[in-house]
Length: 215
Ligand code: URA
Image (tube, rainbow, N blue to C red; front, side):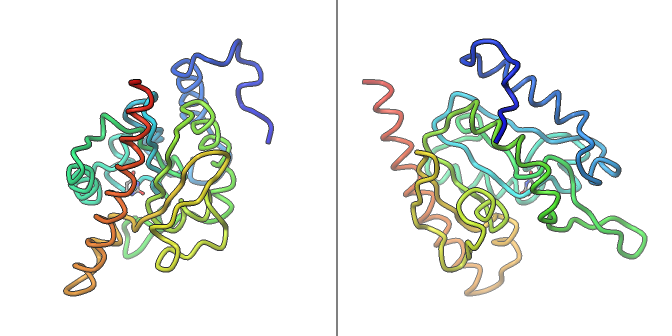
């Protein structure tokens, strides 16, 4: 794929690269999601972190604020990270699509999954972020991120929790926090247990990456 940074000088200044990407995203009209968005949602966190988390796309709260994972799913994500003593300031957090995907129902907009065409249109931005941040580990949150980054035929219930190598990056997927929130009873306990197990495995790799940097 053609690099979005071909015109940029050097190549090591990741903050400048990310700022330029965020600027491109803020004026993007590559798909129809641009028409209904309030804000684009680019990313938060540490662009020097070895760990990148990739969600699906902004919902209503994220569209309103321009920040990823600020609603209920975001609160659960913070709890998942806290289980291994991580905060969102220590990771780089973004989404597959940068604008809210919504459908009108009963006179109001409801969040929906982004379409394949929307994901494809937005993919150069995600690839640009991966290229700039150079994470050593990627955790995909939910099926759409896993299908985009790991394999188009990825099945989240079957394939989550397994390590894949993509372009030299250790990559895993776990359930999306919003999916966990939709579960009840035993299904809820089971989903939480699996996500907690996955984050422990991701954290072990994060520690290894940090120790290697420190030595
Ligand atoms: N769900 C996502 O996948 N991303 C967000 O930013 C918020 C909710």
